[in-house]
Amino acid sequence: MVRVLKQWRHGVPTKVKSLVIEVLALNCLPAEGNRRDALKAFFTAGAVEVGYGVNDPAVHCGVIQSDLDVMVLRTALDDAREIAEQACAAADGGDTNGAARLWQELLGDDFPAPAANKTPSAAIGPLLLRPRPVKDSPQG
Image 1 (cartoon, helix red, strand yellow):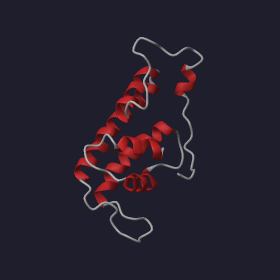
Image 2: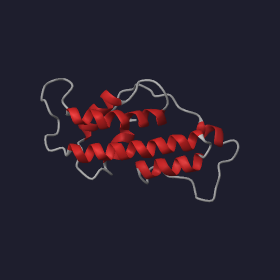
Image 3: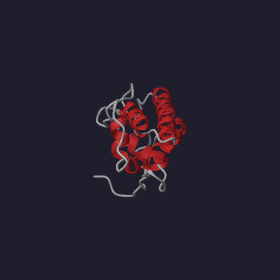
Image 4: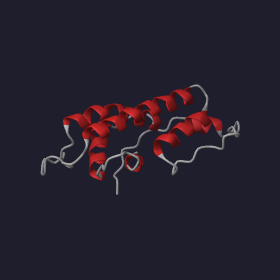
């Protein structure tokens, strides 16, 4: 999930250091649940957390990015939360193609959406709807 969030930061209209996203993920990503709900929860909690400042969790250097435009990042996190909520609602309503297009809008072209005129087959549809658990694994 951290890699997905690092990809997302490239669409934010201000520079956001990789370590800022890592620390926000540490503080804001839930340890349980599925990926889509984890992303939605991250964007919700991250919009609040960034207002408190993003500091080194090891308490060695204080603020990680002193030139971070907090208001721009907070707005981007709020906008991302809205799209994530729409994507989750679409998936819950059975619109997997619509959900995939919303995730692509949020996460960029590296996350391809299905073609506009195609629907998932009966065999693939349940796989797209099935929530995947969040795994706690080292990044690197």
